Length: 299
Ligand code: NAD
Image (cartoon, rainbow, N blue to C red):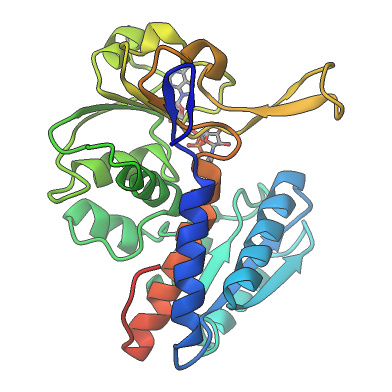
């Protein structure tokens, strides 16, 4: 296993590759190909990159996929009509509306319009409610990917204390719920921290596992991390770097260099949590199809 200065690197790529290989195997034997529809409204550059990764992922595992690229000034009614059509399309098992949407659109209403049985992002209130109730259907992809990553590297969470920094509906909140669920990859004691948490370094330094899902480059330094603790870095931030050929580079929400030799294990950025998110999206799409067709197997 890869170590850097004694810190175990929790790399997502090998786990993602294993999930992709298993999904390809399952699809080859399935009654039909799972279908994913992606809806992208507007010209956001980062969103366009994420969507192209999702398309490539679908191609790699043999899923059917369609991307609907709509202009930034698309009306709410047009978007809802498109989603209605996808809800009714039997070739489509999963629907993903790429966020954020342009400001004039009502994001909550759009997420509510997706059939919860096709909500492979897990953002529909019904699916979030199921997670809260302890009987999840679709779990949001990034939190699910983090749990799968920890499982793969045999990082125990049962009985451990976890500080999750960030309370977004996309990452921090569902991850906190997931890790505190009863069961093999839950049973953790979770503290959900946020921008109003006083004395954040002290709270985090008491935890066995620190998750950084903040959106602030290299925010989590050694002060936040007990020696030997595990750090999961969810952040993807592009910063200026004159020394880099492109003039910019990606960094996480944790101070990677500063934590090497101090943290027991750490997810690199890029190449840690990121690849897991797409793998879990495809896994959720497989799950949606398998429920409809009554087939089994986990990607
Ligand atoms: P968000 O902006 O919705 O939420 C950020 C959270 O951090 C908020 O809950 C806020 O309370 C908290 N926060 C902000 N400043 C803080 C501070 N100074 N102290 C303590 N808490 C603070 O962001 P998000 O959508 O949850 O994303 C977080 C990061 O993860 C971003 O860098 C994003 O790009 C990245 N991300 C990565 C993936 C992936 O696949 N790897 C997926 C989603 C998001």
